[in-house]
Length: 202
Picture 1 (cartoon, helix red, strand yellow):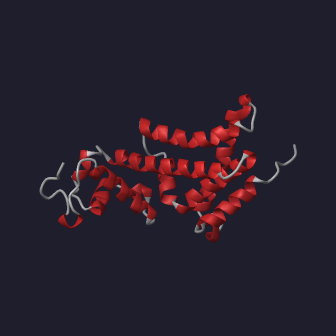
Picture 2 (picture 1 turned 180 degrees about the horizontal axis):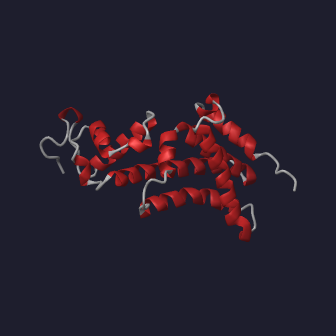
Picture 3 (picture 1 turned 180 degrees about the vertical axis):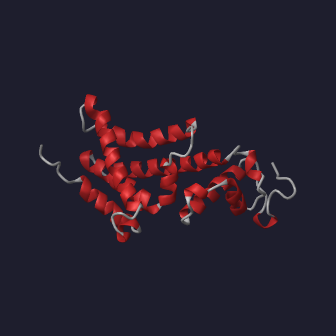
C-alpha cells in the first residue's frame, strides 16, 4: 500500500504495507543503539528518523507504549538468540555459565535497549511482549532444569537470573568501572568469573 502525499519523505522513498511498522521499529532500535535514552524514545522522533510524517506511526502504533513494546520485543528476541547460541557452545554447568556471560555482554553492548526491555514504565505489558520475555527466560530455565532436581529448578532458575541481571545492571550503570561498562567482552569475562565462584560455606 502506497503512502499518501506528504506521509513519506521523498528522499527516503515510500513504504509498502507492513514496511512502515518495521521501519519505525528499526528507527527506535537505531536511536537506542546510538545512546538514546529509552525514556525519551517516542513516535515523533522515530517518525523523523524513518523519514515519514509525525502522524504516520499511528497507522501501526496507537501510542508511545505500543512502539516501545514492539522495540522491546525485538530486544528479547535478540537476547534469546544470544542465550541459545551461548548454550549450544557448552554443556552442563559450563553452558549455564556461558549463558550468564552472554546475558551480561548483551546488556553491555546494548544498554539502552536492555533498559527499555526491563523498564517498568508501561502500565500493562502486551501479550506479545510477555511471550517474547518468557521465551528468552525459558532458555535459562531449560538449562537449569537439566542440572537441578525438578522441585528446586524453578527457584534455581530465578536465582541464576537475579545474579546475572544484577551484574548486568551494575555494569551498564558504570558501578563496576568504565572499562567494563564500555567493553562487552570484559563484561562477559567478569560475569564468567563471578558465576564460577564457590558459595560461601554456611
